[in-house]
Amino acid sequence: MAITLIRTPIVKIGTSTTDSTVNNVHQPIWFVFKREDFQISSISNDGGKVKITIAGTLNEFDGVVDDYLRLVTNQVGYNGTWKILALTTNTVTIDLNYVTTATGYFNMLGRKNWYIETSITVTLPDNSIVIAGNLETRQNLNDEVRVNVAPLLKPYVSMNDNFNYSTFAFTDIYESNQYRFAYKEVYVGSTEVEVKDSTYHFVNSINQPRYRSGSNMEYFMVGDENNLIKWLTPFIKPTAFKGFPFCMSFINFTDRFGLVQTETNNGTSIDTLVTSDKPYINRTMLPTMDTSTGGEIDVVLRVNNEGTFVNVSETITVDYDTECHKKPIYLNWLDTTGGRAFWLFDRVQTVSVETAVGDTFEPLVNDLATQQGDIFEVERTAGNRLVLTTYTTIEKAKGIKSMLYSLNVLMLVNPETWEDDGVIWEAVRPLPGSYQLYNTNETHTSLTVTIELIATNIQGR
Image (cartoon, rainbow, N blue to C red; front, side, top):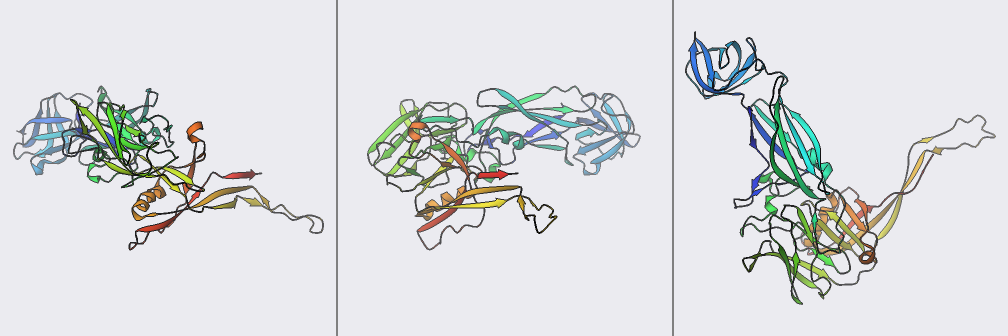
């Protein structure tokens, strides 16, 4: 095969030697190839013209006399596209004046309909494997082929919250899973066999701060004691509200059983967390939620290392709010990191409705004295809206603002019965627009957000 896979979306985790194969599907995920049809063994003088000898074998599908080849060598004057004057099974003479010997490669432009075919297979939540799609890509001026597989992976992440908030831990195979990348070189007469590359992983992250890593999520993953797992949350200190569903998310990259340890004003609590040996997003509830009387909860992931428990995650402090809130509206949204974020809006909420009209038409009036003039509406819709207000710290407001550009915001519709009946979420949409978040000279702010609910009372003719 004359193509080489020179770059994959694999990045070392932090300062470790561990490879991260986890990428987010909302940024380009690049695989880069280099096309080099034939390596040059030697260059000699053939009647004043350059004669190239190769180690491989030329065949009828590579090209014929009067076709062209693209030459790339360590001699700048040789580089370019040249006409073929003569060729054998292992030599090519081109219309280029001989000056000196050189090393490098050339590509036969006589290969008809040349491209690289790539195939993506995805593992679904039920462990079945499907073909996500195929891409056919041609090289650029530098003989490179760049393939972005992210668009093929996006349809295979869920925008629903599938956690039941009753089990302690959950491997979120709906928001993260694995895929395989395969490729082959194709042109008229080619007999290349598909090459199956390594297994990679994808998560439903919208973005992430380490742009030096491209789409790779290595910043949030563990490699060694110097690269601890980061929690997937937009909040420096998340808030858990008593009586409402809550969880913490992280990307697991260990193959050991783990523990979630929490330290509160009631002491220390440890629950076993069975983590997957695959780098999926994992979600866990806090083990002391029912017994804590409020305040702060320090949360850390630990593993057993030959009898000694060591931290594999950063310690994050969660504020536990035990107050009784009147008329609460509880929202859950997909954060830019791929985790879920939560907030309870507990001030006075404003309910509004906005009606809209589709097309209209006016029937022809024949007799103004006897016929009622009318304007007929083809469709009328009513959109329900809630104006939500919360009073909080500037630090919390910075986390809440990530909801305004989330692709998936959910509202809890059964706050009184979710623990018995299971959580029921309804998709809502924060209205686009300009929001005033806070003043820089203050410590607290009153934040107002308008959300649009499912439209009702739809009528049509």
